[in-house]
Length: 95
Image (cartoon, rainbow, N blue to C red; front, side, top):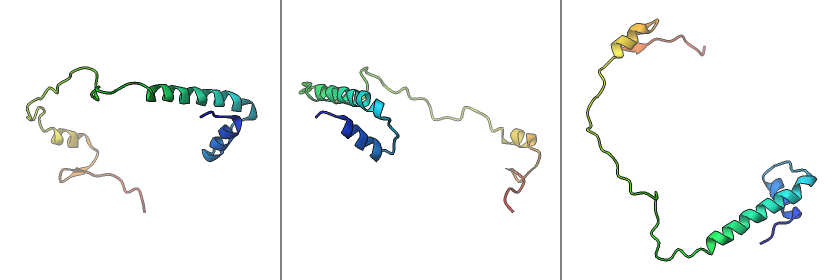
């Protein structure tokens, strides 16, 4: 498939993009390059190749499901201008 200036103009209109007349030819060339690359990728022989999520064998390093920090809620509440019942009190924003 070949992209021409009329096709670029149509795509730009659909995407609500302002593309100047002087840029149509260069955009068409770039889109044709992208399509040529897609054709090359589609022609690649991938029979017998297993799909990969990552090219390296990686394993997850599990850690113990344990609490690693102490409860500092009271210390943080002490820093607040106003707190009551373990909650921060903030000024009313909406009337």
